Amino acid sequence: MADSILDNALMVQSMLERVKAGLALESRNIGIEIRRAVGAALADYSSSISSRSKADSISKVLKRELKPVLTKHVGLLMDKAEKTALQLADLEYLGFVQLFGENIVEEVDGEELLKALDKRPMSLMGWNGPLYLSEFITAWGVMVLTQVTNEVVRAFANIRTVEDLQASISGAIIEKTMLDYDSMARTALQHAHSVSATEFFMQNPDIVDSEEFAAILDNRTSVICRSLDATVYPVGKGPRPPLHFRCRSRMLPVINKRFRELLSPDASGESVYGEESYYQWLERQTAKRQDIVLGATRGKLFRDGGLTAEQFARLQLHKNFKPMTLEDMRKAAPDAFKRAEIS
Image (cartoon, rainbow, N blue to C red):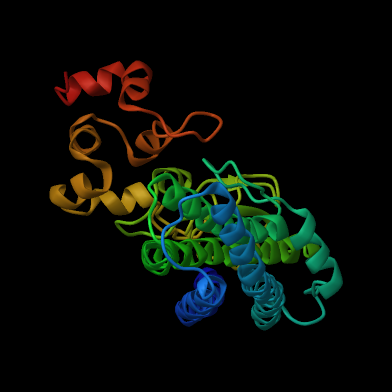
């Protein structure tokens, strides 16, 4: 049964990753459309940008040409996030029906799910922008306009030509715009996944007792996600992915004790499912890989500090989930540093 639940979770995550993979084409289309809009905006200008009035005029026309493009893609991404939330909630439902039966499992109401997607804020760390999904996506368009108009101001400050301005926008600015879109879109879709899963779990309290934070086990996993891996929280109450841009972590359902006897009794890892936690997995990796993931000093502490995987995980984050510095860690576990002979 535990394997079946994990298989269902993997199926849902796989579908999400396929949706994310399609963002590359969308990003390229954005680049093409912005270049076209910039060309149209600058067609009637030439020579150097030597006055503020000319710079202001160019900025105004650029905004006029770019806003429809950006508004269109903001809307498309919001629509994609809503459709993804609905599709993933359906997949969660169908997977649970196969495990527990149609008479037991409750389906999430689509309208209620979309309301939750709109009202449930994101949990992004280190982000000073808006945290509600529609405002978060809209912020991308605002940032693009700011970057473009700032480039106009820089062109005026350095008395560059209109041709130079067009080249700089069509080059570095648009490249950054495409990368930013991909990053924000992946993050938005992960939030849609997180909300859909939580709403489904909350709809089925007789089956789902709590949630387990599940990180991806590879070299790209962030400090915060690998440290929270395998921790368990009441449904909807703990730290919620995405916790950072491009976060791939998710919440797994922990089955209520009424159904718990169906789970495998021989679980050996820290996870409810008997899976390895991130740091249990890392213990099996080579010292070189540990150092790649943790850095040389943390890697040595991990190997030689006499800490269990669970103890090391707790040492990575403050209570507010802010990552600890090495100095913070030294104050919290001075004996471990001594055992590892880290001065």
